[in-house]
Amino acid sequence: MKLFTTWIAGLIFGLGLVLSGMSNPTKVLGFLDLAGAWDPSLALVMGGAIAVGSIGFALAVRRTRSWLGDPMQLPTASRIDRRLVLGSVAFGAGWGLAGFCPGPALVAAAQGYWQALLFVAAMLAGMKLFELLERRR
Amino acid sequence: MNIDWPHFTPWTALAGGALIGLAASLLVLARGRIAGISGIVAGLLRPQSGDVAWRAAFVIGLFVAPWLLPVAAPQIEAGPLRLIAAGLLVGLGTRYGSGCTSGHGVCGLSRRSPRSLVAALAFMAAGFAVVYVLRHLA
Image (cartoon, rainbow over all chains, first blue to last red; front, side, top):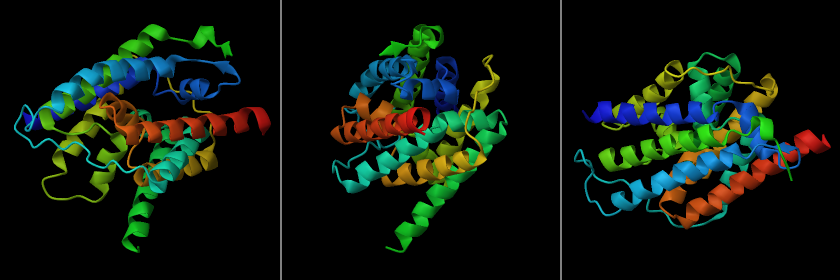
């Protein structure tokens, strides 16, 4: 039941990405191109997601256990530091380079597009590199 | 500002967004977990006992989704070198920044986290800047 529910959450998330057009990098880049012909769709995707998500999280923060009995693992970090900002800037730069962020890239990779598979392989390598760099600190 | 009306899809964008918000709500309410894709995937790269199955289940759900909805082939403009550079930046950046569009953008903003707001503003600004340089300066 727990895993099935988790699978359903992933499935709904993926359906949302596909339906909204966000699994198409050109559509994402159309949003990021403010100076060109601007496609505001991504703003509405975020708006719709946050509108619904706000209800879910408002209910979640009051709970000590999940519906299925797990401990609630909400983030506790609150520090706004250089790591957060520079990491996010690097992520945004990569996002702008190809139009892929992690969710849409996984969806397109699942469809077998080689460009998405290449991107995902590089992304996993980047995550692994982070771990190696962290271990040496 | 010059709106690209032919490509603007407000209704599917809102509906798709609502589904994403629903999925994030379901994961946090039913399992107590944040639907942050980069974090979920990163956890699979350093597997810890008892922490793998839910991550795998969520990712498999993502993988199945495009096979259930009719979807046009994605248009991918970037060539191989650019895709590799982009992937490395996204992988490293989301780990240092502790999240991506889903973890900070959807979940973090839904729970009104100031940290996530800063992260989201930073990655959006960087995305706008890079696309501006690539399309209008380079």
